[in-house]
Image (cartoon, rainbow, N blue to C red):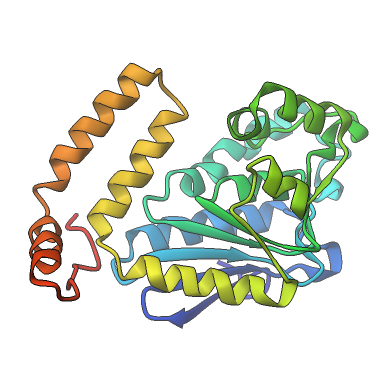
Length: 261
C-alpha cells in the first residue's frame, strides 16, 4: 500500500480508517490507488484486530471518479489487462462492516466505491453521481447493478442516463445514504458508529451482512433459506449464550471481538 495515496489510521481499537489521499485530483482513482485499496481491504479483512472499516476522503472530495488520464487512450485490451474486477473484488468481499464517510464529490468510480460500503454517511456538501455518459462511456464498477438495487429502476435510470449528480438531502430521500450531517461531523460520527459496531458480536455482524447482501443477489425464497441457515449458525457462537444470558441477568454483554476463522 502506498503511504502517500492511501493513508491508514487506527483511531480506536478495532477500527481502521482508510483515507484516499490524492487531493490535487479530488482523490481520483488511478490504477495505483485501486491496487492500494484492494491490498488494504484484503489485509484488514484478515486482521482479527480490526472489526470495522471506515472509508474517507478529504473535505472537498470523497472521490471524484476514475483518473481520466489513464483512460483517454486506453483500448479494450488495456482494460482487460488491468482486471478491474479483481481490484473491486476485495472491497465487495469484505466480511466486516464498512462505513463510507462522504464529503464533497462522490462521482463515477467514487460513487461506486461508496456503494460498496454497508452504510454511507454524507456531509451536506456531498454530491453523488455517475457522469460516465458525459464522456462517452458507462459505469464499470457496479453502478448499474448497485444503484438499481438501491434506488429502483427509475431512480437509477435517471442518475445513470443523465449523468447529473444529486445532493446529500436528495440521496437521503431516495435511500442512497443512511444519514446527512454537517461536514465537520461526518467523520467523527462514522468513527463513533464504528466503535459502536465494534462492541457487537463479530459473528452476528458477519452473518447479518452476508444475509443482506444475499438479498440483493437472489430470489426471496433463496434469501430466506440463507437467512434461516445463518440464524442457526449464530446459535453455534458463544456470543449467543453470552448475549442472552446477559440480557436475562440485566448486565452488559462481553462479546467476542473476532470470529474464529
